[in-house]
Amino acid sequence: MTAVEKVRFDEGGLVPVVAQDAATGDVLTLAYANREAVEKTLATGEAHFYSRSRGELWRKGETSGNTQRVVEVRLDCDGDALLYKVEPRGPACHTGESSCFFRTMAGEGVGLAAERADGVTLGTMVDRLAGTIAQRHAEMPQESYTAGLIRRGPERVAQKVGEEAVEVVIAALRDDRLAEETADLVYHMLVLLEERGVGTEKVAGVLRDRHG
Image (cartoon, rainbow, N blue to C red):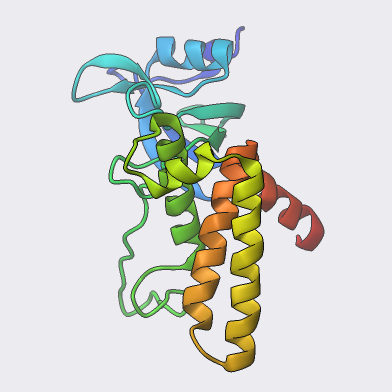
């Protein structure tokens, strides 16, 4: 029995697929796949799904460039659902969010203690910003500050990171604009990672290995 033959497709020939960031564990999206999509995913290492609205096979990132490299495919205990553990290149959601699950629902039995007052966490914004920077790098529009910075090469980008780091130190000592200067530093660090081809998932992997 082949790997695909173990999958229990529904009456429509589809199986639900959860895409999960292999580095962070974040759930990125829920999609569906038919037999061909699963076979192409296993053969190419790129996430393929089946669009129920368009009635056709599609490769994630085919038009947006936000591809997902599949490092592992898991089948659930009943054989009727799949998990793709992926390395995402850019946002998973068509809205530009890093994950399709960015809206929080609350009820009397569900607390929101971990959520920030405005519903946004640093991790969410880093993922979103990294995706935008990757898109600017791919398209290199003339009017983009990010693209212009990348054009000047790694030396200039690294220099900007150093300058912004100094600004963070000054802001901390003055007790003034620390959040704003830190945001500038994070942005330029992400540009440097993108220019050097080091994805945020690699940094996340190092942090995971160091701190569990």
